[in-house]
Image (cartoon, rainbow, N blue to C red; front, side, top):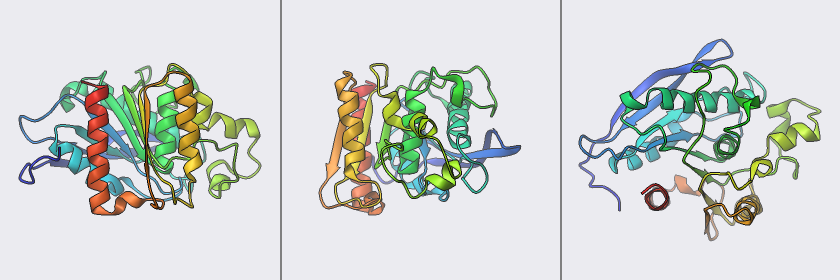
Length: 264
């Protein structure tokens, strides 16, 4: 399924997509080779425990998916050292609104926007996918009033029940003393309903950072509501296992297989 290596992806870096906390938010755009675009846009959300990481982490997926016709956008969001929750999800939604507003220029169908993220980015992707009709997390960011619906969601080893476990990064995300209700409204499991978009979950069962039970709980919840959801569980693999180039390419193929079946 992987495209020929000679197919070149054009990368446009440091593009402003919105404002967050009074400063510009930027993204990198991965444009498919000429004549290969399929009209689907994929927003890539990096991990790092909400407190670290940057948009370059998912450059590999931008290139691999871009070679196969997917327009990819790797966006930043405010980290916890700059702003507490819900700044992170507000910035992710600002990126979705920017993609929809600029769909013609990007060469994508505004109804074929997909969100994908790893670890903390997987958490943010799931929350964004489940809250498109909830104004609470929209923030400002630009393009107010534009829908944040996504056609599908992909999440790698995502935290899904922030109110169920003692997550090490939670004090930095919410500040100390966050209420159970705050944790619940920030948990993807809260938004597992029949309206959730088709979802792909990818997880390693030797993950000691985000236990596999987080992904299986989300899978069970979505399946129980009749959502088109699938879970790919890798044996003996730790957190961030797709940093291995071979496994990363395999995960990209799984992502594209899912999208081809979900968005024919």
